[in-house]
Figure: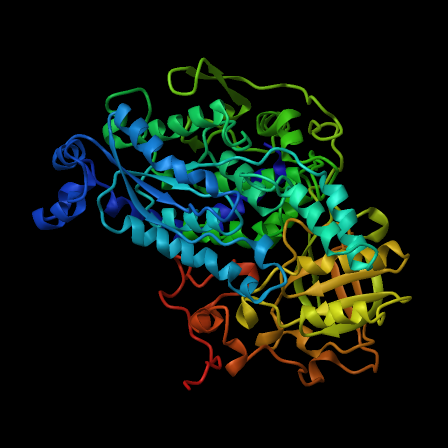
Length: 633
């Protein structure tokens, strides 16, 4: 192992000892060698199979076959989740063929950040992760199940499903991907048209035409944002079947992999393993300290989404593991950047997959000693299972699905490189520290000449105000660091501010020195403008951002990891009174935001995952904060 990877793993393990032990005790208490449903009283069990067909009732009354829960994020509005509509009957049939029985245990909400970007609905986006986790727990809470199949793809859905599944750590759990849509309009061309629209050089029809040509069919968006980062991370965690993440929807191989996932959910139960060659593999056995480090390394090596600086911390906490941003920063210093996928390059995920994809990425990182090989996965013991690729001989249902060794050399060095010939020697993620707090910056898409910006602050309490200032020409002709504050998890749910990227990109292209500092998010889709995001402590809780004024000289230094300020009047920052504020009272009414007052009152800080759930070694209930509620009419 690389010494830094080994050292980071060791300190995470030591730091997490109490929380991990508490988590594993709960897992052990929940485990049962017999089918779980037979702990239920007869009336409870009868309710559980009342709607099943006769064969299903007989199987569920019996004491042999494992019952597999299907938890789905299906809806037919969102392209990534639309394919899941046909999955349940396919999965059920495959489970029966493998010797089990399956039931759709429940559904979870799936919202799209692409639709809500820049809208009030985006203020529910991050909260939806924890709602999904709770919905997953409700689905599994009936104690009817011996394993689970999780159907989800996009931004908050997969982390939420995983956090919920980890609460049932005794259950073997297989994540079932849907795959990306085929390549459409190149992402670089889409970004070009967006900037032209921001400058008023093209109209709405031209913009809509470009967007529709980019997002054009069922499947995930093809850029390397949070959705596709989710897929890569789930595979490297060992929760997908090898090579299944980026197979397009509606193809015979995708169909065969879906059936194989269902069969695997049976094979790794206690009952299924006793009849075959697999070992019982509950999810708690898979998601351990080494697996979490593997996920971090894969994210960094591929230039993945900054949203996972929140999600990986929250996922780790759900498994009793304490991961910090400094762990990620130390790994980023030694993990090379091996992929160039938009917004970090011109390619999309289909090009990445064709160049060797995850199989080659895992192969080269293992060779470099940057991944732990000795981990459990749904494919068996050892991460080397994930250097293989699925191959289908024959049709999807009757064909022979096998796994063969993947490429040992990149098939396109412009997209994917080996660890000894990287695009960059570091992973493109930097943690900034300074008097303004702690922040994260993604440098993999930022050119070196733009990674250090010192300029006067221009302060906004709402992203709409920044966009209006841009439209009015008030940001023209000068260097600036845009401070967009009161966007943290306790203020308004920490929305993504990706809608600001085209405007700031225009200013940068005009030769202005531009950066953004915010306690909000900028997402995996953000690109060339340096963005110090997730600033904590956040402004709404009295963080230093609440005291920044127009004209203060700010430095965003993504090379040295510095976020500093020189006040324009020479005053001590701490002596200033906070200015601005988060929304309050009636301002929360609309788009369901008034329903989330309890989340705003209890959500944790960004560097602890921005979660409403306590850690396993923390008090059971977080301390509520005083937040203004909507007054009854």
